[in-house]
Length: 150
Image 1 (cartoon, rainbow, N blue to C red):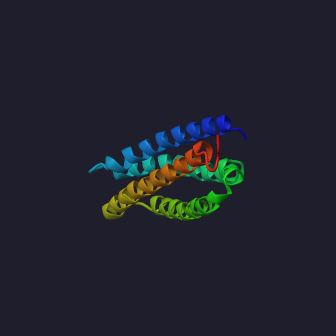
Image 2: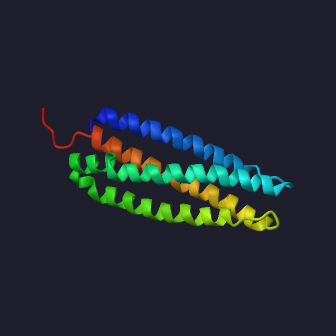
Image 3: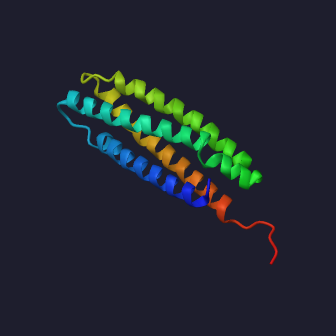
């Protein structure tokens, strides 16, 4: 896979992910004081789309994405690639756990609703940090010239 193809694909995927994260943050940041049932349904819908996209996104990165290309191009970065893959597993667990919590929400439990809102914000912060690490890894793999002489 060429650098241009990887860059375009990553850019498109990250843009779509950012759009979904913004929609999800809007849900978490604007919890209504009344009519919790409608808010819960909206949050469930947005979270389901977000969850599906993130899990697909991580699978694509591992299976036919840039991670194998990074290791091929720069074997010295394999430890960092392995760390990011382990984070994918941790993120998947957090995503599924939060999905279960959101599915179980009821309008009569405002503390659990508030807890889910905090967990959404934390999860998005984790994902943004992870994405930043991935971007830096790709930049390093494809732009650093190591050991070359003129």
